[in-house]
Length: 114
Length: 108
Image (cartoon, rainbow over all chains, first blue to last red; front, side):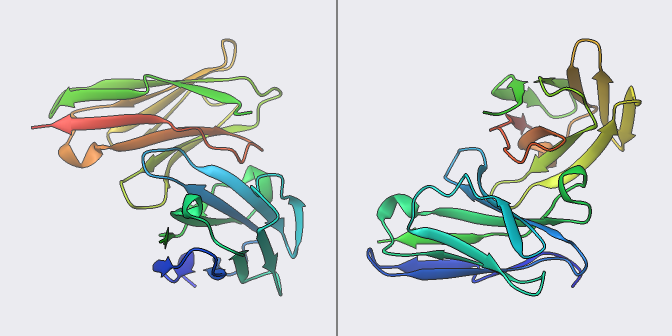
C-alpha cells in the first residue's frame, strides 16, 4: 500500500480482555517496528521484525504482550489480560532497509482500557 | 538506553521567529542521523536523514547540521509557523529507541 496502515484506529476495551492490533506495512518493507506512546511521552520501543523473525523484542513490557508477523508483511500485536496502564497509542513503522533506513509510521491505534 | 540527548525539552517561540533545536549523540561509528517531526496525535514524519559525510541538509524551512567531531546535530527552523508546533525527535542509526524529543510551541 501507499503507507503504513493500522487498525483499528481506536479501541476501547474492558480491563482483563485481550486485544489485537494490526499493522499493514508498506509493500516491500522488510523491517517492521512497534512502539507505544503514552500521553505527552516519547515513543517506547516494543519490538522489531526483520522479515518474519524478531531479532529484538526486548521492549515488550511483560509476557502479556506478544507480536507476530506473517508472510513478511502484516503484523499483529496482542495484549492479553489488558490493564489500565496499557492505555496508550500503539504505533507501527516500517522501513525498506532495516536499521539503516528511514521509518514510515502509521497513524497508530489509540487503546483505552477501562 | 537512548543514544541521543535532546535540548531543550520544550520551547515556546512567537510566529515568524527562528529557533534551533539540539541533539547530542553517542553512537559511534556513525552512519546516519534522522530528524522527525511528530504532530500531536500522529506518528512521526521524517524531516531529514543525514549521513556521516554531510554537514548540512535543508528541507524547506528546516535545516539540519551535523558536527561529527563533537557528535552534535542541530535542527534550525526559519520563519516559524503555527503548524511547526510539534515534537522534534532525532534518532541515530541502528537505534530504534526514540527519545521524547523537543516539544516546540509556536504562538501567534
